[in-house]
Length: 245
Image (cartoon, rainbow, N blue to C red; front, side, top):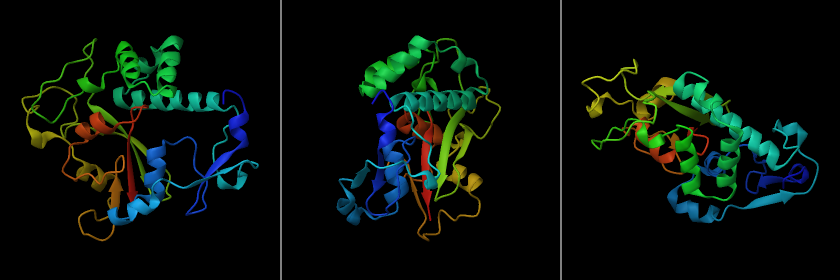
């Protein structure tokens, strides 16, 4: 709804009885609620069973209000996108250079699920996901203005703890400068290294029931963060990682 009608209803996960946070992507929410179930039990959870409530907003659940429907969602999305760009470029320059028209075009592409138009707009805004260095041997281009970010914007959700929102270096050499080691696969920061650095008290290799998910997939720890970001980042350009233990 374009108006305030969206604030008059809210969604609840049937199994847990907990309300859904409208400001998170559906896949992120599903991983948070059901990411720790086995593949064998997954078919019992799909399709995802939700209750729609046409009752007052659950004020006691510490949820963000969605008072103006899609307009509120739009503002939150653009704010999240600008935060990702700031973390990636260590500057607000790229985000501030986006025009109102580019904001409108991005949002229009999202609500129409128009993947092609979305990436056309991002490239026009000098946002080039496919230009950021890959750990593969395939050569990738550079952005129009020669920008070559050396950081990846990441959001990590661990159980019910507050979200960790930080940049992650693409390579272990965090200078951001090109070097002779650029083509060396061992120089790229991996998912396992990120998890151990951000959650040092958790044993991710001990087989003790710890689960991590990216877009519903428990990705091998040796995968490079930059490759995961290029393949799995959301429309706000964050790579979302869910950890459950």
